[in-house]
Image (cartoon, rainbow, N blue to C red; front, top):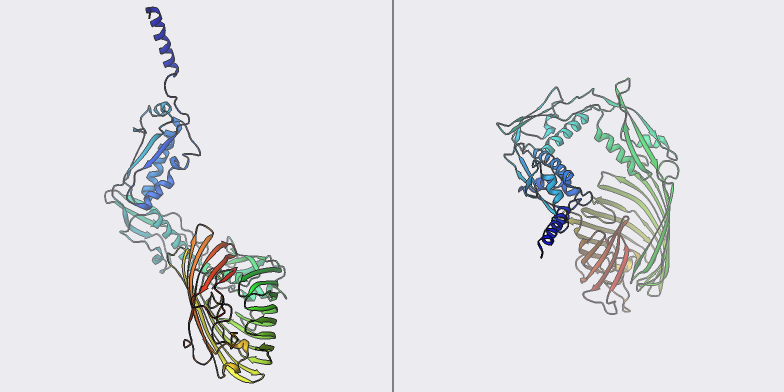
Length: 610
């Protein structure tokens, strides 16, 4: 190449180099990766991760060199705050970008000149140093003698900011529980002793005046009578102020089923008498509601029911519930049937927490065991003894016509049902912990052919174990024991006898088919029953679940519970969890199939099986 041409080529290459042609383009904004070196403390590592805008803004707000350097500087300060909150007041943070410290004046330019691939690495390293502990913990000023113990903060424990702030909240709650509604507890003063690795903490509460509950007013009442609400209220003027007492009264008003929202709003200041007025803001639920449900099983077929409710019939939270149901027929139902019912409930009847219940039901059903047409009446007093315990005592009557084995008999029954219930479960349709138990005894006089006097006793219960305390893996167990004494099996009206089989006792067997049978293999019923179930429920993903279960049961016509021949059923199920409860699908098979019995049963409904 001639010399002149060579020099022209060199000049062209130099020009291209100066303009950036022939090399990788710098990225703007600049992609980057973030590495936070582990500290050995999982909770601290999580706090550091959560405070890093380098991580939270990595994809949503990319930036160039100068802004990225500033973001890293601000994060270093946030890291120090997190370290201090865990008691590491001598901790150091070293952050580098592309291997350069943040105080490198050339760092923004280095970032701007870096290519997009690979992304710029950002690394934060933490030197924790010693962990400070609490030194002197004190309360300035006068407080009631029981208050300091609520701090639950002691010298020598790690100087965790979360523990100190929690103690601040406990101190405020204790003062207010002692009757100081205007109490304030500001953020405590903290004094570091770096030479001793200690942190002194001093709380400076302002108790304000001690006060009683003042005038109590209500807002939002429409159909409810204020006289009933005021009588029901667990809070009264002149009582010492206590937030727990107010919350208990608020929750109790919510429990009567009339209000959708109940808010207790204390005044901002004391009244001229030195009392604290309280206003309850109430929002009433719609006066009427209608609901409908449907279920299906291979033994009972399709079951439809609908109900109409009046939540506040006369203004004192009285309930009127009208129901109608239809049983359309399955393997154990020979003809369609119906059930019509009316129920009236009057709360706080004669005394608080006592409900008057009046029921009237008309039933027609054609089952494999018998055909029944009946009118059933009941009046009872239900008394709530505690949040878990309820007792009930009533008077029941039943006029019925029953056909069994082509023989029709008419019965008039008078009974005195008495019940004790215990329920500590956390959910009606999907319990995950707690116990449900019921003991029921009903002395009954039957006027029929033949007449008889007998006593029916039943003990049933279920319990639930949350295996991992997360509400997703549940072991559920249920059992039932019952006996009718004072009469033989054929002295009992057929509908008063015990039967097993079906979703309520032993799945996999047709409804009522377990136990003694007539020669035509139709159920006889018995005078004693024993059943039990163990079920494992596993929730998967967000709204789905699977179930495995084993049921067992026996019915005897001439003996006590546990003396008959046992039958077992097993199965699996699927659940879809909704806001109103899980939708249930169970498939069960008999482990010792009955002659002429089904090979499997399918059950579909809302809520867990028990």
